[in-house]
Image (cartoon, rainbow, N blue to C red; front, side):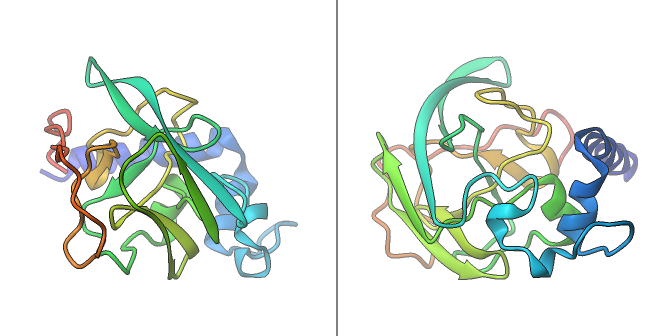
Length: 188
């Protein structure tokens, strides 16, 4: 059943168009129009980046996830943070248009406020990407501060303070492992 994936991808592309046409061009490296390729711009200057390249703060906030109030991880601007199930502790599987819809949280010096897990910067194709207990972190272009819209979409799940350590990392395991929701019936 491929149609839900196509619809979700179409919604994400439409959301990108609403955010601004140059965002997609910059993030994908397109040189059409007057936009400069993303490769020539540092991560902090690419529209849609969720934090400056030099520092990022990961903190907790209350948000409604699938109809239930939960404590989740957010960036300094209150944007919900997600992890992508296919990622490994050292490599992001988020590329191309997927990375446009799900911008990686990047920082060479990430910090945490009110979380017990380990915050690190992992050098990968996105630069210095922030990880929580080994899970690389992302935002979602259709979210707004403290408003979750991407839970379970395309194998992305909201990061919570109890997110268990990802295999292959040296972070201590969190005391309460997070369990991803069903994905709202989309089966991603």
